[in-house]
Every structure is written in structure tokens, then in C-alpha cells.
Image (cartoon, rainbow, N blue to C red):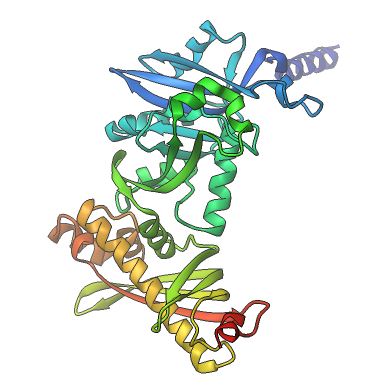
Length: 402
């Protein structure tokens, strides 16, 4: 009898643990947010949510079904209050598990972004694999209201554009919540975020809505243009596309990119980087650290506008490789010089590298210098290997002129 009672108690306790659906919410009760924007309105947070309209993105929906997304906006003393407050206008509660983009307004980013990072990390339903960007010269709410062609969902378009851009062109960088949180918590490196800019008449695009994407040339387009430099959690300013590419070379974040070299007799040659690898190490010379940066590139010739260049000549191929090496070193040097001059912020992780490989030396440097990054000696090397020269062996333009 006692054994039966014990079994009933055990099974009763197990039954309590299996009640996993006590807080369930049906799918048709949720507003699935794919983009979140944060701005400041006075001393309060202005939060914008880009929410999917399921009926407009269904596979059988007609092209004239209307906008596939709607934006809701609310202002409150805290971020989560603002999100909850959106139910004033939204018939569904805002669900954050499928966020693709977090957009931060420029003015908000200048005041510090750590509060929104902490707020979203505390949210149990939010994943950390979305990308974060700063709205350059704009508010986040403006960016999230701009319709986009090709991709029905604007936040998905931003996510895909940044993903493709970093893999094929490298003038920006993609940053997830985990990476940003790690950088903000690390005193030996300063954070960066990609700049997202609205180019065109944003007001007209907002008025036209989805109709603006039906034009061959939309009134407003969204583009990632350079990188925002942060010190601690505050935006200091921007570096342009060329310096951003130098930053990506140093951080070993270039997968593939396109560039050109100038020819001595005029003209230029376009080179496609097939893959790139950057190695960094610390060398101690006379008791002082020296950062050695070595970039190895495999490239292919994509365009030849130099009449004197013969791709059948090994000497000319070596000349192209040497010119490419010079160009890569120049790009990296200019990026470091720009950041030193304008921001005095180590976004490249040199301090972190010294700390990891030579902790005693880094401790001494920190005690002796307020900002060791400013006069740190850096040596640059690049090695380009031309793997292919394209479908044509020699340029037919030379034969035309002859």
C-alpha cells in the first residue's frame, strides 16, 4: 500500500514538471518583429518595431497585396516599456525572437548604446544572431519605414545586404549581439558598428510606401557605407569605405573583394581577391612591442586597361603582384593613421593581441602610457599571388589600336 502511495506521489511530481504549455501564446496572437530601432526622444526611448504582415508574405499572395510589413512606435522611460506600450496601436503583442536587424539612431548612439544591449540580452526570447547597425545622419525609425525592392521584408534586405557585402566587397563589417557585448566588456579593444544610410528622399518614400519599390529607380535606397567608431559605448564618428577595407584586412575579415592598381604608363588593372588571410603577431624589439601584420592574397585578373602590360610575361605578372602588395599595405596604413588622428581608439585589437601574447609587457605599457595605441610601432607586409588571368590571355584592345 505504502509503495503504491509513493508511486502516486512520484508520478504526481513528474506531472507538475511536464506542464510546459502553461504560458503558451498562439501564433495568431503574436506580432513577429524582424527589425527594432532605438532613438531618443528627450530623456525617453523611442522604439520602432518592423512587424511582418503574414497574409502579405504568404506564397499565394498577389503582388498587389500591399506592404508586407508595418511599423509600430512607442516612447517610454525604458526600452521594454516602449515595446509593451506598442499594444496601444498593435492588435498583437510584439514578439522579439525573430529579429534580423537592430538599428540605432546616430544621436542615440552618441549618448551610449550599452543600455539597449543589456535590455535585449535580458529578454529570454531574443536570440543574439541578428546584426546591429547605426543609422548614419538619420533616426532608426526613418530607416525602418523605407520599403525595399527585391526583398519583400526590409529588415531581411538589410541583413542579406550586409552579409553579401562583407563577403564580396568588404567596405563594412557585420556585428552580432554576442560580438558587440564581448567588445564592450573588453577594455583592450574599442567597438565598431556598420553605418547604414538612407540615400534619397526619405519623406517621399515613406508617403509612397510599397509603391516606391515598383519604380525602376526607387526614390530612396538603403546602403551600408563605412564603419562607426565607438569609444566604450559611445559613437565618436565614421571612417569611410577605403579605411573600412583596411580595417577589415587588419582584422582578417576580408573573404573576397575587388580593387585596382594603377599602371606606370597609364590605365589600371582590376583584381578580384579570391581569398585573403591575415596573420598578426607581437615582436619584442629593444623591450618595446612591434605589431607585425602579414596579409596573403590569392587574386585573379578581371580587367586590363594597360596597353603595355603582357599577361603572358612572368615579369609583368610579378609587377602586378608587387603593385597589389603596395596597395594593400597603403590601405592598411591609411586606416590606422586615420583612426589614430581622428579617434585615438584602438579598434584593431592591437592592445588585446599584446595582452594575450605578452601580458607582462602590456601591463607595463598601460602603466607608462595613457594610450599605448597612439605610438605603437606597426610593420605591414602583403603577398599577392595571381592565380588566374581570366578567359582572355592578352587584351584585344592593344590589337585594335595597332
